Length: 383
Image: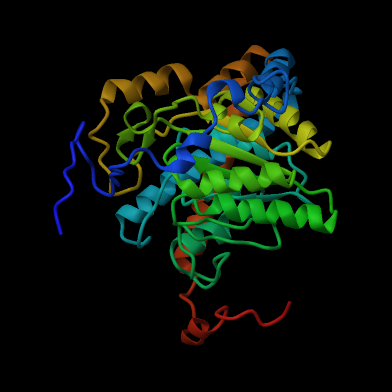
């Protein structure tokens, strides 16, 4: 048996099949440019443009003085709570991981202030404290959960990353990067199946946006026309990797266009712009028009977690964001311009510090879970 001579016309990679008698016969039927399938819509940019144009036309949310004060109060609560959590972590009272939301407060407050707490659901990743506070959940039970106490919202079993409350329609808190996105799509499916009028808001980060399961979720949400708002909190870094170093497409609101999902590019450091964008997105979804993808451009002042010194960015970068783009300072400046007194704002700040200190005292003085709690919540006991 002779050896069949092969002439290699170029480098052959692993798994390459060589056909000495010519190309595979099926290759003859491969479509050419001229026979390519036409887009379903005559305007192939519609999914990219539609809600972005509506958002640009809507302007900032026209909040009353009292509404803006409420937004300010909620953002300050998140900031002071997270600062206290950082202190407790340093004292060894919080174990495991702890991811702070400092700097990103306008995102959760602006978006969730537009939700209907009676029917809408929220799901997020491991940086979840701010979302729970923005949903009106008692700071005491959140702080107790952070410190692993039985009075915590998840009975001390969830810790920082895995908080959960069916009563509040808050479905986590998830430690696996991107895992909450398909789960949120499932929540949206449940809303549609039950015909309860609810919308799911599923948060994830710029790093999680590169997970394959995110795109599987986009596809199913668009295919089934599900009531879900996908929210990318783009804080510029996936742990220590800058967006431009880890993503070919750095405009995350465009990433749903292959699935005909409209995208919105939003300044996540302006609570009133966030709230206005939320109303545009919710109107679209509640009208039965399917999912929306929102990119909220924001910034975290601390490291990825409490164990991250954040040496991958300069102090000047962080300082510039604090001085020029801080969402709380911006809201305070606007309140003062409207005639709200400095004394009233100081009273709010003092009140918030009292609430946070009370939450910390409650957590420190609450007992740890009893040993039998190890065996509860393992299996579903009732449906």
